[in-house]
Image (tube, rainbow, N blue to C red; front, side, top):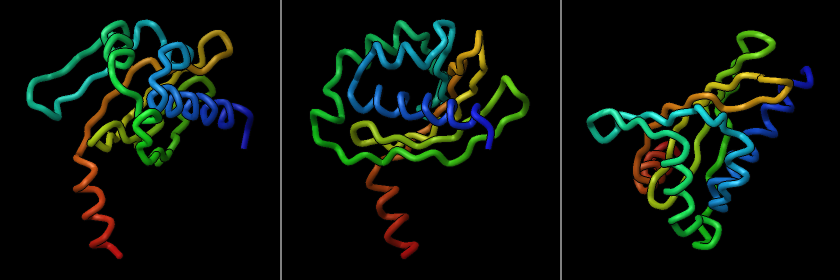
Length: 134
């Protein structure tokens, strides 16, 4: 395993911690300023720039303050070259379990998330699926 894999994992840890703690400064360290978060889970395309995301994150009660169980996990990391990667992760925020596809580029020697596509399901549905599988 080369060093860049560990660097990507560190970015993902900061990503998870930033959302769990609602720490906008930590999130600014992992997202490129031009990044957009996109989803069609609720119907029409949602396309949020980072300023919109940061306002939303800063305005909510953090999962940490709510003592929410962390369900963070890295599902896969696919490197297609020395400077590009795709990470598939899951993270819980409030009543939703998100699956995020994070496109990362190494820019000026530092890995940054340059785009994100996400979907979600209610956490209760995930719990029911996990229990049925047991």
